[in-house]
Image (tube, rainbow, N blue to C red; front, side, top):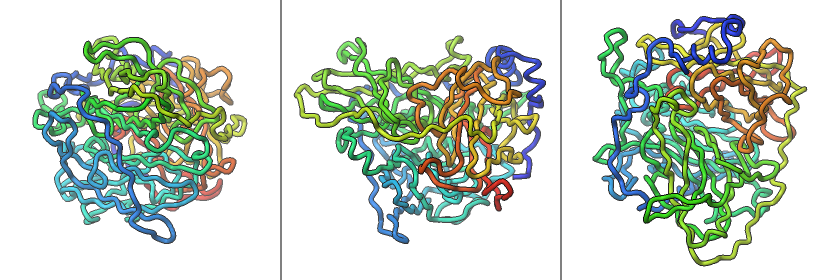
Length: 602
């Protein structure tokens, strides 16, 4: 990781930045009110000129992903063989079959169900064609990727997995068809997941360098549910009344194929772009749930457990259930509320009713229970009012790509028995004490531009005066068993869902950037805006809003009998996939102890 990828466009020390700007000035510099460098045009960022075919909504039923069965055992553990293949899938009844990529030849991929404390092994096999399904920008990390010799590159990442670094899915551990070519950090064909962490809604998806946005958009994602006996004994809705919901946005051509913008037209003579060219963000115009466009879900009037994953490239969701008149296409009063019982890393201490809307950032999971018993015979709409881009400058300019209608829910008229319950105590979630912190890290998020004049979101650090690209030297090196506070200071114009591999953290809260003093000896947690209920417990993704500093506390290694000790190289990054691919990703290295050194690089 000592090699460089060129000069970074912003060279401003933290102290000089703080002295020169307030919060408003920071946002102006970053592109919120007065962008510097090349300005994004609508066609580059959102592609509003493109529209998918006018599909009739609410025709197809929401499918439920199948559960993957082990192929056998390996070294005493369940052993899975998961092939990635190109298939045709009916995403809407009125569309021709769509060519997608799927794990086990299905989109989304099958759910892997594992037990806490029982390791599994997975052999991931690339059976995809040599040519990519979507347009590939070969300028992204071109000094590290041999575009002229490789086929389709993939590498799976168990998102939320507390796993060994060699099974984490490093972006440079990619492999092509039948392992014909492998990346520089490829180590093994069979990944080992120890599952020594709280039961939770995890997911797996592709993480290959420079094409993560394309591979996930093509369909390479699936759920990984970790369970234990205590959770099973709680009496929560289960079996057919526990439904995974993978929310995504997609766009389609008239022939049913996936549309993804290319952006590169080469008309800007000052900064000609390649064609195809990466876009700063992508928002589809069609809601897709579990691989079906504009679907409806038929349920009974009783409690259901929804395991919701935001699997979109960039879109946020603010969800609420509304009464719906399907014949008129109009919404009425509020429907049943969401009761949050778990977040990214597992169950909460106790359930919490969401008073307003349920915010789910990209890659986050919300484990909720909804009681439909008072809505027998009614139709409900799962409604989304999140702006896209989320909390960005285009909110005031009208340059938006909203997606209000997510799916329809039909509640049967006949009453049914419902023995399920939501107990007042769900799990033990020990609090990481703020007074145990060994290191506090100031981590600014800044705007720059690349050699083609394209917007570039970058991550900085307390240790250096500039933001960094992926291949700049590592700046975050926690020691095993240390506790740290990571403070994400968002000096850009949009919200970013920040993800850390390996660990789960707890959200301490937020404060305006103008009130944050990174030179202070400690953070006054009591003065922070507290986290929302959906951010309680263990998280691996947190939303960092513009003009704010978002503080999380994280322990590296086993904590109060939870999680396990791992050392080596991992990644932290924005989980807007276009940002992640375009250098808003950095390595961190967990050292064995205060004197130790890791023996390899990412």
